[in-house]
Structures are given as structure tokens and as C-alpha cells.
Length: 610
Image (cartoon, rainbow, N blue to C red; front, side, top):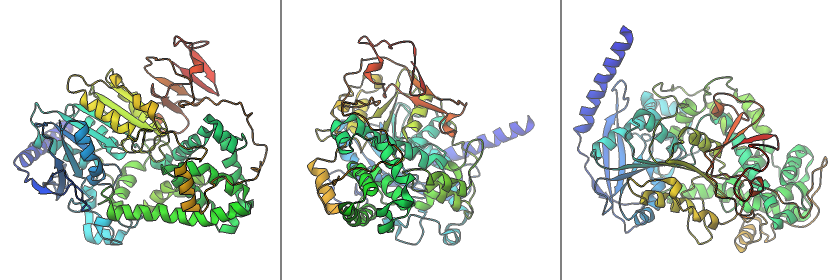
């Protein structure tokens, strides 16, 4: 008891000291370009530097946090923080969306962007010397000797707990008690917001969590595999796509490819290793434009006639060049990834996202064995695990990455159906925690990672953007995500699963040298693939082909399989959550919304509890 008393008293003294340090500052806001890459803009921005401690617990060290704001003409003291993804991205990733978001929300909030400590224009900004920091760096970010000599133990200041305290300290510095504080975060940014709620549940008035990323990344490839199979299987929802694959099950097609990989002609003639094919498939599934070409490429690799071989020979190298060079050019010329730090990313992934809350921690050898069995792997868990053997900086024990907050704040949780970076199970897990009357989870059909950017509609808009703007515009006292119109979901641009639009044909020609993505010839069947009749109708959990689903008010749909645990986020294939945003097919309900049969429906090995 005495030890606890002394510890608490010391902590309180540190906090008092810190508050005094922060409150004594006056941020010096000066005009600055909106875009960090130098692009011109009609929107005026202001920039400032926030000086704070390196370690909030010991008060040791110092860092300078770079902040940019765009002042809303009608904002007063009301603010909207946009928390970067990553880990490792800077606030610059949102610069392109600021102007339209300010307009859509009637300039009712000033938008604040932070370069997290270790990234962007904050000092120090962690980078290996491969390329200038402003333009990015080689993906490894693992130049241990250089980092130790340049930054020493200050790398340990770059952790999520410190970032959380930066947001809390800055918010208290720039707002008054009657100002409204809104937070939006995507991916890692949603993880940060959850930790802010844990530290100070009364700080925030409204939250949007988009494409949430949670630990552990041990499951990273497995979750991407699941999302990739969902993407392929959605072909069955569209008759034109089913015709293209001769009514074969797309999952059987890709399974045949990998089961027979050592005997396939095309990979052998093209000199492609299995891991390269896995990475190519994952990258294609990740990219909004290349998704329609994924299944045609799978078919061509498996079939491998002369036309297929030429198509792949031309296209694989070109695709990799386009994909990686485009990313590099984005790093050099686009504000989206300006200031990205792979060193920061590695430190967070190693010390907060790699470890498992409980149970067995797989070795890098075991992680390789897991990834080798999957179809959409990029072997990131293996890379991080191997890097842990040489990384010399330890974890920060002030934060439990598996902890969740408690808050009644109005909240919208968004996730993309085909998110290859942060599986929708992460967002569904958050929705199970944040589940009061004014907190809602929506999975957006066809969308990928960052619904704010990657959920295009047929009218040229972005569904995620529209939902977020509408939610914000409801205004204080009226924020209710269940009152959102969600009409943009019916206007979503479907993925071109049969690869027939002019856009897809042009991309096929540009990348693979041929406007015909599918080629010709029978798809070989190894080991008895299951075919579907031409009138087969698949019932996915969301499809524009399905009839109207009754307007039900369901609190949650929980899908259990054969093994349950108390901590589902740490165990794959034990407990899955499906929100009201992922309603089952209409065939499961009567016209008045009642469940057909009984309250529990057994289907495909799952028990659906309504």
C-alpha cells in the first residue's frame, strides 16, 4: 500500500509539472503552404511547433512536434483532429482532403494535422540515410548502427503513449472548456484514438474511426488472405463474372494454382517464386484500379497457354514497376506519404503490434510457414519478427495495446469490405466495445483501406467522405450515426468483377499489353473443383445484386464457430463479429423482418444469433 501511495503521488507531481510546462507555451502560428510537397492551393494554412518532453513519465529529453491547421471561418474554438495512419505516416496524408472537407462541413471546425513525433517535419524525424527524409526511404528502415549512432535512446521516445499525451496536451492548450473537439483517425490513427479515450475519456466530443488497425500483426497475412478470398468470391454475385470463369468457384481456382504451383509452366518460365506471386496478388487486391484484373491474372497463371504466357511476361514486370514506382513517386511528389518514417513504423510494430497479449508467440520460422500456406501474403510478420532479433530499443510499458476505452461519445466506425491492410474484424471488435445508442459500425461494400478515400460512388463522390461530413454536420447535441442517410451505399461503384469496363480494358492494355484481360481457353481443373450451374445465385453478406433487405434494428450479429475465447482479438478463427452494417441476405428474413425458422439459424457451420 505504501509503495502504491508513493508511486501515485510521484505521478501526480509529474503531471502537475507537465501541465505547467505545456500551459506556459504560446504556439507561434505562421503562414505556411497547405501542401508539404509544394503544390499550390487557394486554402491558407498555418504552422507551429509544439515543444514538449521526450518521455512523459521521466520528463527526460525533448522533441518538437510539427502542427498544421486550417482555420474554419465559422469554427470559433471548435477543432477537428485528423490522426494519421501508418504507423509512420505524417499529418500530410490528409492535406488533399482538407479543402473539400472544410467546404462540406461549412468551415464549422478548424482542421488540425500533426506530424507524429519521429515523422514528417517533427524533430527528430527518424530515417535511415538511404534517401532524404522528405522523400521517404527504403522500406526496411532497419539501419540499426546508423540509428543508434544518430538517435541513441531517443528512439524510445517515439511510441504511441507519447503520441497520445501529445494530442491531449495540445488539445488542452488550444481549446477552452466549451469548445468542441472532434477526432478522425484511420488505421493506426484509430488505434491512437482508442488509446486517447483510455487516457482521457472526456476529452473528445465526437469520433470517427476508419479502417481500424489493432494488434497483433502476427495475423496480418492471414487476415489479408481472408479479405482476398472474399474479393474473389464476390465474383459469384455477378453472372457476367461467373460466365468468365466457366461457373467455377474462384476460390477453387486460386487453390488449384497454389496446390499445383511447382508444376505450373508460367511461373517456371517467368522465373517467379511462390512468394512473388503471393505478393503480386496481394498488391493487386489492395489497389483500387487493379482489383478487377486479379481474377483474370489468376486464371492466366493457372491455364498458361501461349497467349497467357505473353500477357504475364509483359504485365508482371510492368505491374511491379507501376506499383512500386508509383509508390516511390507518391513519396517524392505527393503529400500523402511525405515525411513517412519506416523507422517509426518498425519501432511501433515491434514493440506494440508484434507481441501477442497471451499465449504462444510464433517464431519467424513459424510465421514463414504460416504465410507460405496463404494466397495473399507479403511476409510482413516474418520481417518484423526477424528484425526483433537485432532491434535494440525496448517497449514502452505505459500502454497496453490490447486495452479498450470506455466512452459514451457519439462514434462512427467505418470499415471497407476488401481492406487488405486492416481486416474488418478489427473494426468489428471496436464495435463490440463501443456499442451504445450513439455509436455505430458500418462496413462499406467494395471499399478498401481508408474508407474516407477508397469508397467511390457511381456519381463521382466518395461514400466514406459523405458519411463523415454528414455525421459532423448533424451538430453538437444532434450527433446520431443511426440518423445518417447512408444513401451513398446504394450508389457505390461496384468492382468490375468481369473486367469489361473501358477503364479496366485500358489498364489491361497499359500494363499487360493486351486489352483482353481473360484470354481464351478452358480453365484446367485439378482435383475436382466444384462448379456451379449457370443459374446459381450466391448470397454474400452485401451485394448490389440482392433484393432489398428489410429495415431491421439489430443490435449486433455475432458469428461463433467451434471454439470461443475471452480474448477473440488475439486468436484467429475463434470468434467473429458482424455488425448491423453487414446484414445477412434477405432470404434469411420474412417480409416483415422476422428470422425464418428460429431465432438461431445454422448455416455453413456458423450459428447466427440475432
